[in-house]
Amino acid sequence: MTAVHPLTDGELTLRPSQDDPHLVIFDVEHGGSVGTVEIRRTTHGVGVVTWAMDGGPEVAQRAVRLVTEYAFGELGLERLQVEVDPELHASARVAIRSGFRREGVLRGAALVDDERRDVAVYGMRKDDPRPDTLTGWTALMDSALPKKRVIAHVIVRDTSGRVLLCQVSYKKDLELPGGVVEPDEDPATGASREMHEELGVALPLVGVLAIDWLPRWEGWGDAVEILYDGGVHDPSLVDTLQPDGFEIRGVAWHAPDELAGLVSPLNVRRLPLILADPSTLHHLRDGESII
Image (cartoon, rainbow, N blue to C red; front, side, top):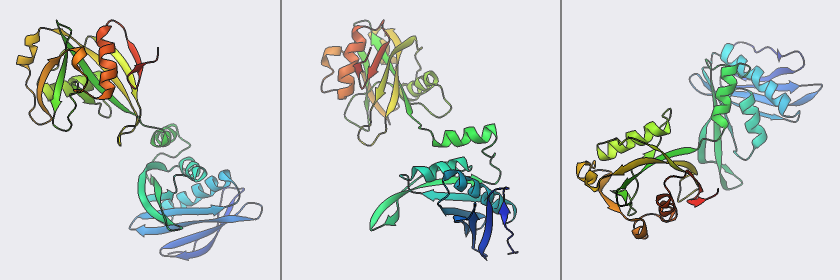
């Protein structure tokens, strides 16, 4: 490795204090010594960036940016990582504002004072747009902001006011047709796709009956669910449906007053409410009306 020269942005200076094939350490000066930042090569083309500074998050961010460009340019690295405790929000902000995208959490990956702690991983590729560009900044924000699941189910009724429910293979509760919306898929398309995959037909969607927010439940994160109106049909519709036989084992009509014990407590709360007044858009929180 060639000799490392000091790095500077005009106000901040990073002076190399250690330089070997696997580790470069810089002392950070900002009107005096404020800490260190280092690059540790882990595998071919990949390095981990760490820092320890007293100069505040802005100084840390500027130092990390200097080291990042040095690592991609002079060291020829192609990917850099930052690994921080998810509870250290200031460190996470430095990582994001320095151009590192949040990529995930390694559960229990660190041992601190005999306690297993999670590690949040932030990554940057050499060809990533930098944080001072529009695409670079929006990509960073997209990686860090919450991502909420969207579920699209379809309420199909018959002329007697009954609702179509599916017997599924993965739980005892009967379920509505539909499911989780895929990335880059609009909810209506997701509802139609799921219905076609499950029942062999995608009935026309004639409106939205309810929007429901679902809290965390049995390992699932919270979600927004859209309940579409699949229309009113002759009871003979069930004879034309073709359950996939894997996820959906059967379908049948069920009256609103016989749902208890057949569907989840969530659907016990909300389906009778929706079926009693299908002309209203129901705004729900965990199956209960909020408007």
